[in-house]
Length: 216
Image (cartoon, rainbow, N blue to C red; front, side, top):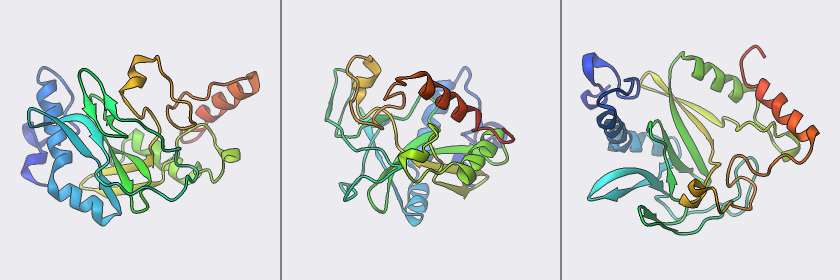
């Protein structure tokens, strides 16, 4: 583990809980993700991390695809790809620009075929890792008919005491979703669309949520 990935007392930057210096910790996490060594490691695994937008020369919590390659056609369980340029009064970015969350434990990438994925770092042997391992081994649908309303874990990659969970990228294609006014119309653009239209679909969603924990 390199020196820059550790903070107080040798605690890893992703493990340090936010507190009085939470903004500083989040910035340290961005620097950890942006390290050339980690980007090269992901490339060796077939994933090209998105680039980050920059404000006054500093990386932000927003990312956009680093390459123009797109898959020839949509394939399940990957979401439909549809996006517009982001042009907002407080953030600008090219197509597929997305927010990484305030904790900075998630990034986005494209695989060797150009498909968009989300990557989350979790600690080895943690409860979250056990759940993601269960999803990886039990809930990877091949068609919409078998979709359990739970994002599948496509791959788990071990790295330096952590695991990277690779999942299809679902969610807002632009900043518009945060306004909750202009909902995207394609399946996969945001996680709570399409809405359930019957009690049967509601029960199916509940049943799927109950299946995500080990031992369920």
